[in-house]
Image 1 (cartoon, rainbow, N blue to C red):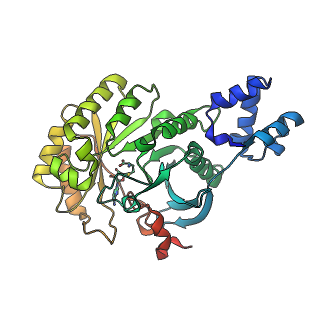
Image 2 (image 1 turned 45 degrees about the vertical axis):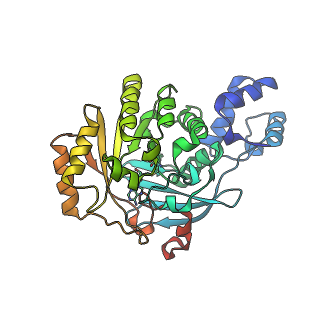
Image 3 (image 1 turned 135 degrees about the vertical axis):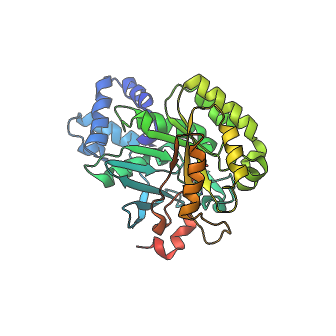
Length: 347
Ligand code: SAH
């Protein structure tokens, strides 16, 4: 038995063609799954009894299990999910005006050891399967009911490019018009700077938004924040992004977590501006969300405005990301399984 969410559209199509089913049948199956939200093959009444039996014997429709849902005062919701091997991941649903953004995980834990991030403290437990990645999106759509999920960001737990193949298959399924039907402009892959992944993506021929977590353009400083800098240096990263832009013409966004008295000074701005250079990009500033076991500090409102104003003089495409779900530890970099032990996590 195979989880049907593990398979890209063309694979399921092949399997069904091999047993003599016409291609339009697979469309019908996916209409049941994605439009009518039916996850039981026996209820797909427009299919022949034979086909229903075959599907039941061949496939499952397996989803992660929701353990708890935490509601933030700002409307965002954090879901603690349990996977089949009892490991846990988190995802966050963030409604804003007429947008519904889902922040999903790509790994259980993470291997990249960023010093300011909660997930890093867990270390890497394992990669998510394709079905576990797209399953998060399916669950969110069930939760949303009539409301549409509009945006997906791979900014939950894990480094997406350390689970490259599964993440790319998941993205293809999320974009497939017979499946999740999410516009390519509305899917963001966020990476700590895994150069081989960025290079591979530039040749993949699929359209997504790419976000790079930069956080400092000063090599020594970035190394303390993000040890990945020891492996993939800042100049190499820049060169890779230039090639990526040149080849794909797709937009690149830099994420910059602002940490008080650490990466918000004159030298930091100077290095950032020099790094960005003539690359066409956006810069997204994120105030560091505090984690009580780390000694970094979040910037004040004044410090945030001041830093962004200075940057804006040089690059107009600077935005400040408003933190959401802070009260339930659902904000950027606050996702980790151990938060189940926080009093906030228990409903
Ligand atoms: N591994 C990927 C995706 C997950 S992190 C990556 O590094 O991009 C998603 C974003 O959250 C990154 O931009 C990261 O820099 C940011 N982040 C991590 N911890 C944070 C914290 N405590 N406060 C604010 N942002 C944080």
